[in-house]
Every structure is written in C-alpha cells, then in structure tokens.
Amino acid sequence: MQVYQKTVLEHSRKPHHFGQLATATHSAEGFNPLCGDKVTVYLNMSSNGTISAARHETSGCAICMSSASMMADAIQALNFETAKALCLQVNTMLTSDSSGNPPGMPLQSLEGVRAFPSRVKCATLPWQTLLTAMMGETLTTTEQEA
Amino acid sequence: MNSLPFNIDSIRAQFPILHQQVNGHRLAFLDNAASSQRPDAVIDAVSHYYRNDHANVHRGVHHLSHRATDAYEGAREKVRAFINARSIREIVFTSGTTESINLLASSLGQTMQAGDEVIVSRMEHHSNIVPWKLLAERIGIVIKVAPINQQGELVLDELAKLFSEKTKLLAIAHVSNALGTINPVADIVALAKQHDVPVLLDGAQAVPHSKVDVQAIDCDFYAFSSHKMCGPTGIGVLYARESLLENMPLFMGGGEMVISVSFEKTIYNDLPYRFEAGTPPIAQAIGLGAAIDYLEDIGMDNIAAYEHQLLELATTALSDIDGLRIIGTAAEKAAVVSFVFDDIHPHDLGTVLDHQGVAIRTGHHCANPVMDFFGVPGTVRASLAFYNDAEDIEQLVKALHVAVGMFR
Ligand SMILES: Cc1ncc(COP(=O)(O)O)c(C=O)c1O
Image (cartoon, rainbow over all chains, first blue to last red; front, top):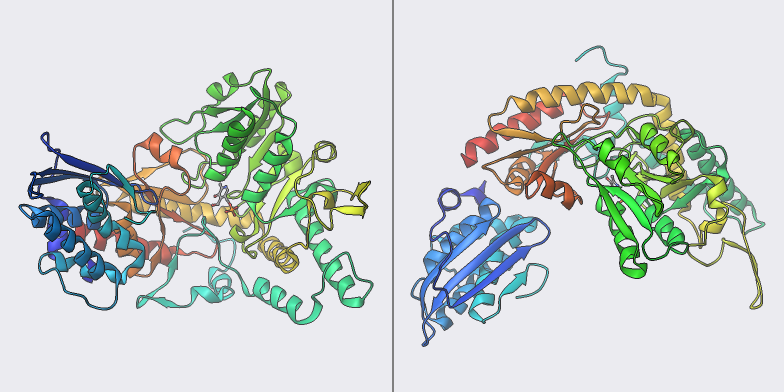
C-alpha cells in the first residue's frame, strides 16, 4: 500500500523530536474531533522569526504521527516565511491533484495519503497546528480552516 | 459451525450488493451495525411501489392514493405485529431512531421543569444523550448516568440507586452499538416500575437481531431504525404505550396531524397521526414492511441463533491474534466485536482492512463516553449480520494478520 511506505512506518514507530519543550515561546494544540487525534506543537522562535527548536506531542494514527515527526525534522532552524511556505507546499501535495512544487523527501513519502480521502486530515493536522502556533494562537481543529 | 438454521448461500444470493469486488478483493461487509444491506425483496418492493402505486397518502379520493394509503398503513400493521404492540395507534413513523428519541424528548420536555431527572447509561449512543443534554441546557433537567463495568455491562445495583422523586424517564439502550452488550431490559423495566418511572428503550441494535416483544418487556417507549434491519433509510419507529401517547404534547405541526384547521381552532388528528406531520416516508414504510416480511420468513429466532454462532466463531478467531484486546465482553452479547491493539491505531487498521475488501467501522461509534471509560481513542468494530458467513470472518482475520505484519 502506497500510503504506508517504509519511511512513514519508521517515523510512526519512532517519532523524532517527540515530547514537550519547556522553553517554548509558541505552542498550539490541534484536534481532529472525528477520530480523536491530537497534536501539540512546541516552538522556540527567536525574535527574528527563526525556529530554533521544535517538538511535538502526538497521539494519533501512523499517518498523523509520521507527518508530525517529519515536520519536526523539516522545520528545525527554518525562518518564519520558509516554514510557512513549506506548510503550504505540503498541504498542496496532500490535497490537490495539480502537482505543485513538491516538498522533497522524506515529506514526499506522505503523498500516498491523497488516495485515501478519509485520511488526508490525519496528515494535515500537524501542519495546521504548526501554522496555528506560528501565528501565536493556541488551538485549532480539523473542522475549521487553518 | 454447528448445523445452520438456514442455507447461508441462498440467503447471500438474495443480497446483490454482497457480490462485488472491493479493491480487488471479495467484499466482506462487517459494518452492519452502522447500516445493514438490503435483499432483493426490499429493493423490489420499493421499486414496485414507485412504478405502480405512488400517490400521497390519506388525501386523495383517487385510486392510486387509496393504493398508496393501504400499502403505507399495511406497513404500520406489519410493524405492530413484528414488535407485538397492542394497536397501530402505538406505532409512530419517524425518520429513524434519532428522530424517535428527539420526538420523545421534545414532547416530554414540555412537561418537565428544572431539576427533573432523566436517567441514561454510560453505554448510550450519542442520539440517546444529546437530546437530553439539549433539555438540560434549555430547561435545566438533570441527567443521571448509570455506570458500566469492565466487561461493558450495566451495573444494575448502581442504576437502582439513581431513581428519585424527580426521575421522569429512564432512557437506555437495549443493545449497545459499541460493545454489543444486551441489557436485561425486562428486569430494568421492572425496576423502573417500582419507582413509577416510564422507560424508553433504544432498540436500534436489538430489533434487527432478535425477536422483540414490547408487551413482554413492558417498556413504555421503544425506538428503532429501518435501515439497520434491511429496510430503507429515512424511516424509523417510535413505539409508545397508548395511555401515555394520548396525553403527550405534540411534536411537529403541519398537514396529516390535524383534522381541521382554522385560525380560531385546530382539531388534531387521532393517534398515531397526531405525531406524524407532513407527507410521510411512504416508499420507505413499504420497504420496511417488506423487510419485516423477509426477516420473519427467515425467522428472528433463526437469525439470532445463527448470529450467535458467528459471534462465537469471530470471538475465538480474533482472540488468537497477538496483542488484540476485545472491548466489550458482556455475558450477553449481540454479534458485535469491538477491539483494539495497544500499538496500532484503529484508523490505520481500518485503511489496511478496507484495502483487502474488509468493511469494518473504526472510531468512537458515536459513543464517546464508552471510549473514555475504556481509555481508548476508538475501536475497530466488526458487526455481523445473518448474511455474513465464516469466509467473511476468515477474511477479516487474514487481513488483520497483514496489518499486524505491516505495523509491527
Ligand atoms: C444504539 C443506537 N442508537 C441510535 C442510533 C441512531 O440511529 P439512526 O442514525 O438510524 O437514527 C444508532 C445508530 O448508529 C445506534 O446504534
């Protein structure tokens, strides 16, 4: 099955950057009320907008977990604008047929989710939560637009 | 399996939808608690009605209106006989279990005041929680919740303690959709009678799987849905004891529920029509009637016996899978097996199973309080019907092994 690629499974079994960040300057919780998935994103953002540290606490399915894990890998040391652009890139990859500018590996291994419409929100939830945290807000759900 | 009470292959042959490939595999449809499938007899009855008999009911002097009315009212009589109500005056057609419960809550709510109590249980479907929560918000009634134990059984001693002078209703599931627990409804009703409290049973998961006799149970209200018992969607039933229904405040207003209307005075129709405003779901009622004929032809006792064999087969086979934990192990169970793996999320299982043609439900099954009680985000639920067979269960088990191999 395309959706459960080796990379995805590896990240879901051993998620990277998992846990709280005591010194977080920004954090947000994201919920998927339909399935109970929950992602908390913790960021340390310096005054010039660089993400100096990112962690997440995720309880959810393999797709949600690996998406959060890869996201945390990808955004370390990015600045605000680049991280935001990456969020949009991933979102486009997961939700639209027109192939936009792909986000590169390993994030591209999540692309298979698109064939499973009921699971797309599992993959987008961490990113939606990240955007929420970066905007200085604290709560989001998959039933509202980020 | 032991000797079967009917020929399963000829039963399966009557359900056209079962004979298709899904994702390149034989379809194993194990999501019957969410909605069942329909046999040819029901599909044909609905189609025959639309092709030959349709007109609005109770209104025309013309021929088709008579035919439609006879067929519609004939379905009501079939429902009455099926659950052994005393009279068709006690059979209100609704759009389903949810509307049946909302009808009752809205009507009884007009007679309740702040501080009045309604008892429900921890294992209720959201449709038997939210209507009462709405009354709590609107008029300040208090909801008391009867607990369940680790097997997913109602704790009767604790339920008994919840009755008070202020209790206006006990509203409880006959069979739990999330756990499969069959509640001892006759005992529960007897208990409520000691306190003079009327009882609503949510029979959505009971009526499709065993003989239900509302007089033997002695409940006051009984709600169920056609679509879970091989009938069409969009219709359900509220059985209500006539002596109570007679004095209940009305639910919706419109045509059908009145005899004459002027701006000075309205004369309301007789029972049960007073509670059925507007053009009813006529074709759906006729389809439901056909479903009842079909089920009675097979025999509800045969269906219950066969499904019990399937349940035992499934329970044994699933228990053998490493790390699989069954949620809901009541002594009395309908053919529902909810389960979890501590290391694999239900939605991942659902997707992998679907990929192998196995349709099961994953998630909270509209019963969040049950999931919270067992401390799980959701479960995987296989719910069986009399048209399932041993091959469906083998396919489920095989697909689960594939999933386990993939995620571990
Ligand atoms: C126990 C129970 N009650 C109520 C309902 C609601 O039924 P409906 O959606 O047909 O109104 C269901 C259906 O899922 C159920 O299983």
